[in-house]
Length: 119
Image 1 (tube, rainbow, N blue to C red):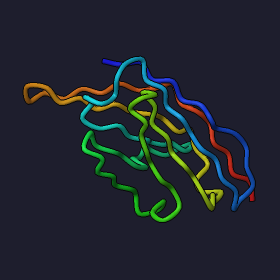
Image 2 (spheres, helix red, strand yellow):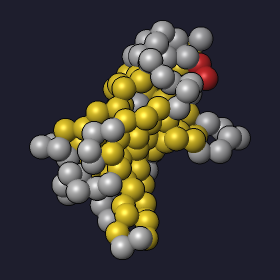
Image 3 (tube, one colour):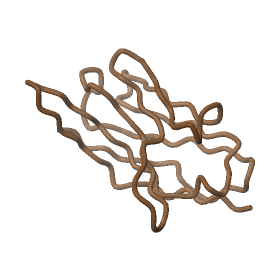
């Protein structure tokens, strides 16, 4: 397991940008995948983007071309660069670490950071 601390959320106008950071308590190089999820009020938590230990990335259709996930193994940190933000991006954003070991999977979560996009 790993402890995750998100930062970088805030209030921004539509069309603006924010960069979220997720600092891990230990090396992320061996973690199978790191991801960002979000949860808007009254909605289920949804996957926004993930990056595998091999560097493969994937994005939700709603953020493709606007968001970029990246990792810095030397800093044990994962980032989510969010550009061209829309009011519908408003949500609490959570960092996730996904482990697979011996055929079993487990997850660690951060506490979340609020992103609010005003129109």
